[in-house]
Image (tube, rainbow, N blue to C red):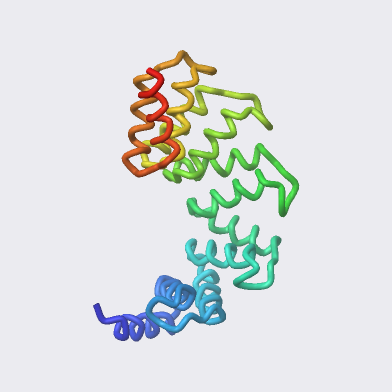
Length: 212
């Protein structure tokens, strides 16, 4: 690996308006891993790539506008960039739109829009979107509870090794509140989470083996 040469050639490409090179340089300057951290330069390169509709750069600019530590917070601009990235099925942009419309912190809460964007992100194998959908359908707080859908989305996330989803499935099958109790399934999902050193699942397993 030769970082100096990598930056040299990325810069040559960026100067010829190559959006991927511009995005990579933005990433370098944002993270400060191989060069001195420089958020202003990072934003400049992201903007150049975003002007060419690079979905990763569009998402990054949106993320920076919503997080005050990077730039002056501007929710309208953040939403605009997230939406532009989302039109290209950018998983993180779709997920963040789901969060924004669910939380209702920056815009009026709109559960239908939240579920819409989470669902699109879930189709892109975004485990956190799948997990959040599982929660929404389990809680039944803003929409009607749907246990089948909840288990479906938790299962998708669990297959992607999201420990929270594995633990929730363990809870559902152990509690037996919404589905018939199935200790073996509960242990199976708790074990998956336990194997990733998830303390809550390990505690649940301890309780199961102590009580049963």
